[in-house]
Image (cartoon, rainbow, N blue to C red; front, side, top):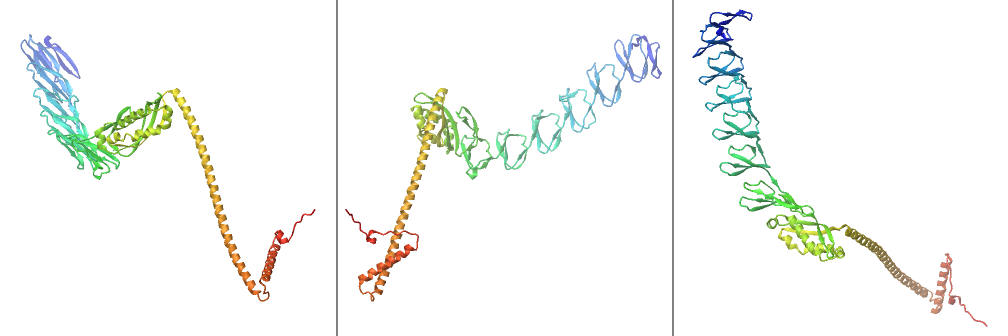
Length: 529
């Protein structure tokens, strides 16, 4: 209130007050102060007090500023510009020329927090770590970081960060396990990084940023780079199968060739300043895209298909499809001569096919396309050999006309040819069956002839033996009957009679028919008139 009217307020208890004019006197309570302005000065009187104000002066009362335990106030002297900090808990009575910036809340930090203050007058940075009670900035300080209160960096045992001192530019590595607080001028570079576990199949290529030298770390450890080092690459052990090969280009540009068949090359790390050579080959049946990237090369034979258009002598456009069965046999020669092995092989074969096919008609092509493929393969081996490639076989698997109408005619020709071939095949099969049957019959007859010859020989042998036996019997008979019948002729006649008797007994003892010759019957035929 304006006290120039010489009114004052007297406390009457229980919050009641009474305004009394006491001839220029002004009273202030405990939480008030009197601000008296004269023509040349301004003064304050803190309550409780009772002050007389001269008639030419003016006075006002104002409340003291109460500050709690977590509050503070920045006060500026408007005459000198000096600032000060008032920190609670207390009541703040401003000076005659003081102005405040409003009550502010102090900062409370836990164990994982910290705050950095920048003094705008001196440029110094003050760091306050957690659990330091109520943190109040100085009169000329402000929070340095836009984030305000910062959190400490929790680093595990396999983590690290890179920190740079912005005042002198030096860097350091903070490695876990720890709770890391940034210093006054520290700034984290990048995020938290994982330490690298180096084992028998993992290595790290690092470069010293001061000297520029590279080194390959292969010793088994949990690796954290030095402050002057940066990790260029984490390498995995390169393993080659028996049938694989690769190329490593060194610092001098020289290529070294590694083969899985060599025990010393089966597994290795790429040395510093070296790199695996990546080959870019064409792919697709027409090799229309060159985006097949290879670092390890399969040195085994394998198939590769192709497709391209060509024209016959009678101007029929054909689409040929086929396959190569090929193999890389000389890796250095291949790298020296070409950067696109599959593209070179297919394009060269295409040009040769076009040259050969253009010299024959469609009908001739249908008859000799396999021979054309063989000529393309065999008559140009030097081209492939110069590129370290061996073509084991080259064959046309199918062909068709590019034009639909021609394709339909060709399909009819192929169908007729197929039918003719099927009929020929059937006839050949029938002829083969007949030949086999005839051969069987011949073999059977030959076997029968052999059997007859064997039987004849056996009969002759049997007859011979029987003749010898019969002769022995006859000799014995003649000798035995010589005394009774001296005449040899008579003895022979007797022998014949006995033999006929034996024959009659043999015939009469079986179901047989007996036939007499005219001589045996002693019959004659006479013609009578």
